[in-house]
Each structure stands twice: as structure tokens, then as C-alpha cells.
Length: 425
Ligand SMILES: C[S@@+](CC[C@H](N)C(=O)[O-])C[C@H]1O[C@@H](n2cnc3c(N)ncnc32)[C@H](O)[C@@H]1O
Image 1 (spheres, rainbow, N blue to C red):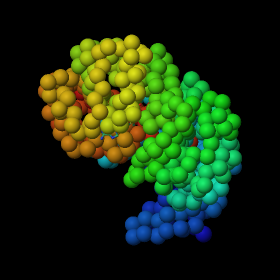
Image 2 (image 1 turned 30 degrees about the vertical axis):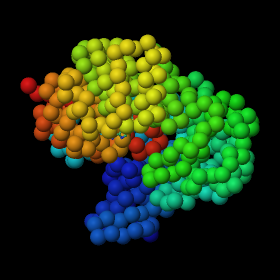
Image 3 (image 1 turned 90 degrees about the vertical axis):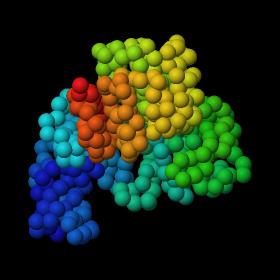
């Protein structure tokens, strides 16, 4: 056993300390804590450790309110006061931009914490192995069986309980079950299998008896590459979300922001930027079900949404109608083909909200060659790729105006942020 003093936490959730001048990473610790550790992996330049005992605890340490914590890989920060978690994320975010983005003076906005910070998730991807349902153990593919999760809204925990009774009806267990419970009290479920199943053992009525009255429908899916492919659907695949003045249909296969308490805040922040600038044309890349395109249409003459997922595009077109918006068009396409849509449209403002990989080279090239483009609103769920992209866009003449985190994922290491870039003239 060895003693380590934790210098800081790093992206990914672990603490960084030093053992014999070698960097070591320790999970479930806090800055300035003295911890007794066991080495679990030794590499040339660093070591992985696990904490055995916290010898000098930080005043920001709390008793984790979950009995699965450290065993289940879902949460990283349940041992830290929520306010301190936000402070730590803010610091990691800033350091990542400085180090990877080579940004010297960061115009940082105040972070936006989640209120409340528990039971915020409106969707969950549950892993299944034989009779176990839950999440992967930390850094493992072993499933931790859980009764309920503090991050999930109550309806999802209720459905999780019912799933235990549902799964034996299927001939063999699915790999995963995805549940979405909307702000309007509707739920959809996706059962993802390795191979197609011959027969669906339960109808909607019986499935509702187990998962809850509010179940709109459930689908059978087959895993193909990274994405599940829908094979069949029983009942309706649609649930409706309301955020502020807007209503969104979100089908079982579309993305929607995970934290039900933060969606409206994020929309308001994007809306404010567009209201201040009143651009004539806006392009919303990675537009999903129209979460930002539809609010943007209030202040722009014309908005174009670009989204690769056909289900999300169908939802977005429906959402355009139910929100009474006429000046938005949605295109089903990869973002990299953005120039095809924008060459003639020439937007002054672009919103981008890419997956964790950030913007690819082709998309950045296409964005930076738009003649009229003045403003980029970049919503990111990965500070490392954001830092890289800010740096590349900086070389193309877009200057960082403001950036800051909006905590979408309390108790986990994940960092969501909103960044504003403007073209230097
Ligand atoms: C983080 S979500 C954001 C969605 C939306 N802006 C929202 O806030 O609800 C990313 C979206 O990008 C879409 N997407 C992923 N890769 C894409 C690509 N290469 N081109 C266009 N859209 C893509 C996904 O289907 C998903 O809807």
C-alpha cells in the first residue's frame, strides 16, 4: 500500500497524484485528499490505482447516497458535494481548453448547475446479462444489477422494476433496454437484441401492466454496428416533451437532451444569442428533433436544420407544424455536406451540436468557407474535441467570445458546454 496526495481531478473523473514522481490516477477522490492506494496497472509513464482508505478527507466529501456507488460505473462524483462538482467541472473544462485548445485567456461564463441534481434523467440505456439489469461495472463489461438509480426520474425506476418480470417472457435476454419518459408523462421502450427474435411475447396491454400505464409503445431492435435497427414496433413510438414555450415530438429513435431540468435553460441561452443578433439565415447542424431550430425561427427569417437520423427529421418536421413555425426546413443529411445546403443560403449564424467526436475536418472546412458566416454557437458534450475545434476555427478567423458549462450530467464526469465564436473582420 502507498500514500498519495491528490493534486486535482481530471477529465474522466479520476484524481491525479504522484507516486515516486510517476503520475497516478485514482477514482473516487477529491483534490488535496491524502489517500492510501493499491496499484492496479503500471504503465511506462503512469499508474492506475484504486483507493483503499481516505486518510485525510476533503471538507467537500459527502456520504454517497447510493449503495451501488463505486461498484456501478454510472456515477463518478456521488462522494462530492454537488456545488463542488460543478466547480471541479468548471476547472477541468478551463484547463482542457487551455491545454488542448491553446487558448490563453478564456472568456468564461458562470456555470449553470442542475436544479435539482437528482432524478434528472428522462432516458436510460440499461444493460442486460442473464437475469441482471443495470449498468456496466466501472471499466468492465460486467453488469451490476440495480433496483433503482438516483439519477433517473421515478417513472424510469418504476419501469426498471417491471422489466425484471418482463424479460423472462422473451426466449432470450436482450443486450440492452432503452427507456424514455417524457415531460408529458409518456414512455417508450426499445428492446435491443443481438439477433432478431421470432415472436414478441407480450402485447402493449400486458407490457403496460409491468412497465406503467403511460407506456406508449415498445420496439424490437437488432444491434447493427454501433446503432440499433428497428425491426418492429408495438403501439406508438412517440412521446412529447415540453420545454418552455415549445413542444417536441421525440420518437423512440431520436435524440433529446437527457436532463429534464436543463433543456429549457439551454434553449433559452441559444435563443438569447439569436435574439440579440437577429440573423436573416441560420443553419442548425445536428438539429435532432428541432430543439434549437424551432426556437431560432422566432428571430431569424429562415432556418435550415441538418440531421442524419431520418426518424429525428420526421419528428422535426412534425414539430415545425405543432409549434406553428413556417420558416424552418429540415434536411436529412450528414453535417459534412453542409455546403450543399448553405452555398446559396449563406447563413450569418450556425448552431452546431455534434456527438462526442466533435466536428470532422470536412464539416469544419465547409463551415469556414461560408461567405456570410459571422457567428458559431457550439454546444458540446466533450471538452477535448471542443478545444480542438475552437483551435482550428480560431485559425480560420473565428474568435472565442464566451464559453461555459451547463451541467447536464450531475454526479458523472461528463461536461456539457455552450460556446460562442465570432468572425474577426
Ligand atoms: C447531441 S445530439 C443534438 C441534437 C439536437 N441539437 C438537440 O439538442 O436535441 C446530436 C445529433 O446529431 C445527429 N448526428 C450524428 N452524426 C451526424 C452527422 N454526421 N451529420 C448530421 N447529424 C448527425 C444525431 O442523430 C443527433 O440527433
